[in-house]
Length: 560
Image 1 (tube, one colour):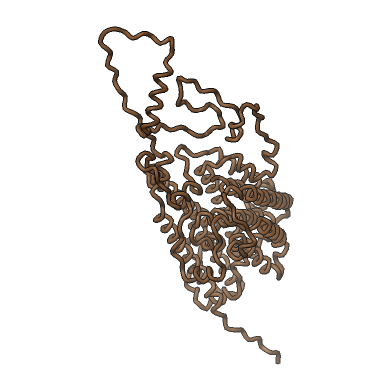
Image 2 (spheres, one colour; image 1 turned 120 degrees about the vertical axis):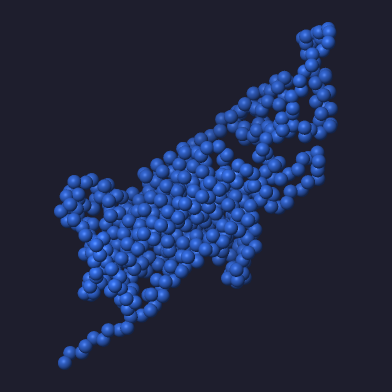
């Protein structure tokens, strides 16, 4: 008599892991909301002007709405994928599914034992990733998310650490647990609420324990760029390796290594010793190294995206839309075959979003990330030259400043490439007409010291012109005195909270005010710069989401 194989009791571990995935996503969203509230509570008086309050509310609402849209898209695609996966598992094991009038199925036969068995037999997370990676058309969408995640994690490591935004690790993990666009838009809100570094005094017990094991680094400390370059090279090598392991036993290992390396740029500055980095006296000292890092990311993203695009365009085998879950997808074979024969290769790549809910989730995530990326570039009014320098390594290398004559040595020290026009004596307060001089001389109004007023009066009496018209006889005309213009809103003194020099000449700014003056950034008061948005969207359309993210985030890191 042949031995009978005993069926083992399904384990509760997969069910616990699935529940912990949902619980972790909710918890991370909660602590990110708590961090946003702390950032809002620590906004300084300089950020409480009417214009900035109104603009901050509008932009925070806009990016918050985009994050909710991304969350809704992730939930919808996730439910569709889970439903399809359970249908396939039930049909393979002969479990009847009660069909409804709407085309779905009833939950009458869905029991806890069936759910346990389904989760034990089906690796949900790996299945979704493998379906995306096994075909070049679907990889075209999924790889863009991986490439954009690398540059976005670098933004977390640079701007997040500079501004002391709390719970940076929550943003990084939320991109893997929910989707990238949801975490990105939440971080955009965090940067809007944290224009200058804040004091992160509220620390949990876990943070205090980690601070004892890994002492915090001083301000303006950054690791040596060579460490980031090594991590980037390893990231892109693993991205080349992951699609080759689809359908093999090495796929789970490749995915785990890829996810760990994508988080490494954020973890590295916290765990390495202080001697492996350097302290910079000015934040601008790191601009050149940051630009080189984003150059590496943009070039590698362009090469990988070009390789995947060529493979997707070349892949024209019939029936390439089929996958392991095709048995439960009601494809119209005749219509689908006619569509494959009549469409172009690029349309087939774009149409692969309809192959599977996992591919649709990746495609929608790419589109939402690209849209919010362009909006962020327009809101921040990023410099187009900075964006191009982050993408093209040799952009702007041949540009040289115009030579100045030897009679203008002081002008060269100020960084002005052309001599300004001489100011006539009749216009003592007119600013220079040089295009490179961006400083605007503001009228101080009545805030003029007595000595300076006496000096101006003396000079005005002494510098009378010989051709001045004689004084007329008779009663003098009454001249209406116009009120002295008051200083404009938003001056440097008002922004920094500095009182009038005549009222308090011994004022010393606090460290917080100094930090806001040096490290703070202010959103433009005028209309958004749609030229930067057009460039971001154009680079994304041509080179993929990885290239567009490198351009925008590279310009963001050097925009202070």
